[in-house]
Length: 497
View 1: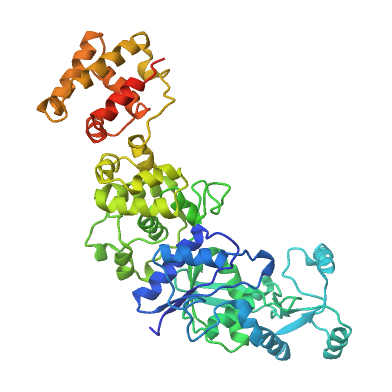
View 2: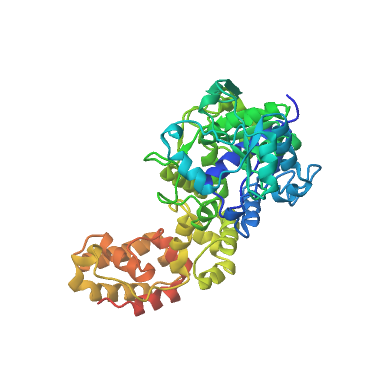
């Protein structure tokens, strides 16, 4: 195989879509699995959609996910510039389009937007590939209209009734009839190239070997194949991967849930968990490469790259199951040791978390943080849930709601139970065996017997008074971390009404 060069060529139109991150993940893997190069190229010729700061956001997410390009606007490289609008200064796109006109493979079209809209409403244009009435203007007619200052676009002159084919590395042999292909605009009236012309020229000039993209881009392929032919370019290997759909069908859309890569990080998803989830959307590790472990789902990024082959990509569409992503996230959190999780949590609090600054400050200077994380990490599905699970250590609830089903059956005894729980904890000596779990449990059971309660009822009163919720990490371990003084303070301040 010749030197593998893949690329991610996004338009800077805002946030990084998780579907784009899925595609770039595979493009990067193909390059790295073959000791090749991964390139970032910015396609910014659609100025109406350009968003300030979008390129910086692209880099932030690529760096965060370990997908830093070998060449790009920031890194440079021998094929610079890597920003499409900067490449326009050389006139490369207009020159190529005019060359196609001279060869009879493209033509000038002077239709205004309104004329084009009206034309497409006519019966003879409906359900047919578009052909402009200016397709066969004479050279003198064209020159005269240009001389008058008429605005124009340059369109691809698609031949009639020919077969265009591609041998796709994933889909196999695919064919189209040119009678179904529009005369695509190549140069817009503002002089900027359209995607179809620019992408072909840039991929050729930058020596891109593999075009890896989602299945939804397949309809653009025949137009680009014609351009490769007419420009006398070598055709790269095309590989159209499966679509990633919402569980209820249809494309991933923010109307159906978050699709912003950064927002997943804000919500407390781990980068490694997201990557593991993405790699299994449209790819499965061949059994022989994972030693027959049929049920294996956890793979590191490095493992994925080492075993990745393009032919392993699946044709069937993948489903973006957010519950499965949560499963991966919980798996990764639970298998970290507390010290590792502490580092990950502090990084998240600094870069992504949208929570109270006060809690961030507490966590950042807490020597007991690993012990607290040990109590919650097996249950938390996200880093946000980790924080929610330990926040009671730092801030006592002042608005405890006692009118809940867990205590309603003994609500009239609540204050007396609370008093007994307080007195019992006053009697405990932190430094004696009496504060051991067995004796603590026995003391709480006696309170239950005194009030005719079930064994767990006094524990629930204590839990709510300390944590502010009927749910908590293991209570005894949490109390030992809080310490007797803080326990007594919270019990004394508990308002049982």
